[in-house]
Length: 461
Image 1: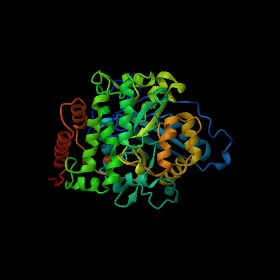
Image 2: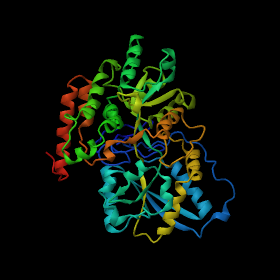
Image 3: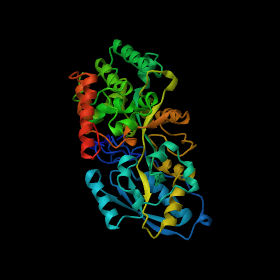
Image 4: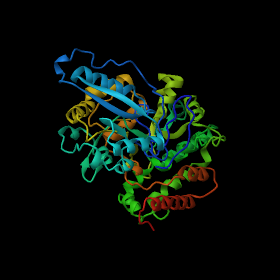
């Protein structure tokens, strides 16, 4: 996952499992946790506003009530979640007591230990995707497959919390997108349009470079950020080769010998001429500054970066930032790669199973999402079907939402395979620095994934 870095928090690189990656959504941790297996969460709760949803008297809608407990990563932004919990108590009499745990591998161990010992909270907040599947959910979590209200969730999300044809989770927050943020003032200055193909994107970069400005902001002093183009290109890989993730899991397909997958590294190689001169010394926070102050036109990053820009410079500056997907080679299928948020899972051994289900059903309603957004502006689209974002959402989130509404989106590869090498950030840094080629970088990553597959006991070749 990629680690989300909040304002004034020093980023640390762990990387192995993202994204992606909690502002309005839980951001995954570099190697081990998060809802985005390549992104790690930040502790900041940017974009916060005072809750104003659900203020009317709704006592008549209360149930008999219940007291529930929730175990959640302390790095997650809790403003939106707490707002929904407060509204659930007011409407249904269901009180949720939140207990925090540490993140990273230590947090993983806490979750596994408490599950094994029978001491898990009523609700566990944990990754979606492959790392969740490794928890043996059939033994520990409530099966939600037959709940009618699960039909309100997008199928791409449901796949990330499905194990052996049983569905176990609901999303805790909004999604995170692998995007290229851009400064609208620079685009207006050069009369540029949002690119729908990689060639159009490269042409925009060339125009900006010829104008004497920085076309691409590199922030490799925070190493995970160098992966975003490679990881965010997976929608395009999957569009060209839908079987790649499945074959990669089996070891029968590799990046270096699959043209669609190799293309992700080739694209990264093609960006080399356009970075700021100090890209190796530029940090995540530095890049936020550069983009907001028009000291660079583009920054490939996860969408939660908009929260930092909001905190640093306010709403007006944040809405001068746009976002588009890592383009493919054809405008006919222009789509976005997303990192699924962490999910809520119900403890199968809880004495409050019906109350847990009632809370889950309420949490994914438009009313609850409105309460969430009133407390914390989302930095990405939601997994709930048909939800209309509030008018004051960041402009770039509206752009991301357009891909979702068009059905042009898919999950990052780490939600489709459990094989994830640890060295991708270093490999991408070597490539961007010109120390290796796209073909060699792809081969290095295949070799890195082989080590991971062997450690997992997979029969890779």
